[in-house]
Image 1: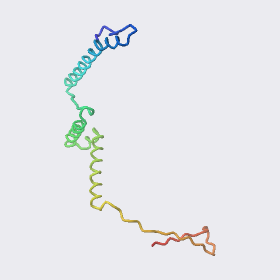
Image 2 (image 1 turned 90 degrees about the vertical axis):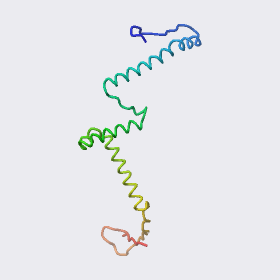
Image 3 (image 1 turned 180 degrees about the horizontal axis):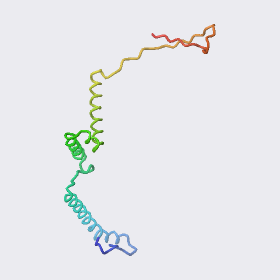
Image 4 (image 1 turned 90 degrees about the horizontal axis):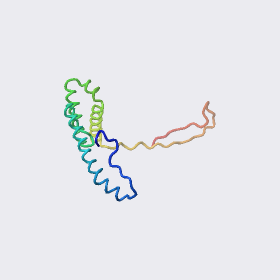
Length: 142
């Protein structure tokens, strides 16, 4: 839209077909041009600021790669500062390391736990009364 015009592409009438036709001839054409101009302006502003970062929605792998490389560069200088400056990357890398350690441990240990020992409970009733208990419990392992 032009800066001095507050409303653009007004249609007053009764025909929805005419309104759609006018919208295709004016609004749709202008909307595409304005969208492209806005994207180009935002890109130019980002380039001027020197802050060109990959957007996650556009390139998720590139975004993660960029964040990890920034973290690694900071960690070469001071690992504690890198963890404080980029905690999401430090946490993510920590989880990846723990995952691989767990997977390695699972492979080394055989991946399954032994069967628990069978335990049977035997309830006995004594003729003699034992203080503070009415029916003592005896556990017998098979």
